[in-house]
Image (cartoon, rainbow, N blue to C red):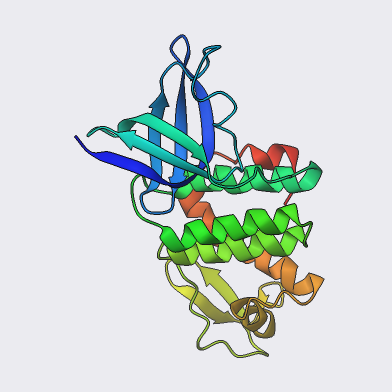
Length: 222
């Protein structure tokens, strides 16, 4: 039987299962997205009481050979992050995005660090728009969909095609090369660059997210 002992994780999502249990989606540093059942987690004397919280660094153990594992021990691996108002909605967006695009049990160790850094930045009230665009860009890279900015010319316009990347065009409503260069450098130096970055990330993420809109978009436009 496959057993994992106390590895760093964050909880992405929980939902009730049967009478007193929970289905929990974990994001693990070493093992990617893992689905587990936390048995009797909703019971009054549950050993998981107040531990399966979102945005809290945890250590988790689980076991099992099937796609749905059984959750073992849970320990705190840091203090819960203090997120409020828009910052909290942004964090929900990150979780929903990961739930939608990550394949189960594929390792994304570098992405785990990016996610942790994004939550820390949100807790510290940094510019939330920059935080989201940076995470989206790094998420796409981790998934194997990195942008190729190498041949971008600053004064040319470009159309973005999901399969072919950036294609030169004469349409000023598309992406200006200089904005793309700033995005490639992760230098979100102006509202114009941030607007272009948001537009670009939406185009690149759309095929991965699918036709069903993210629930977080209903409550907060990010």
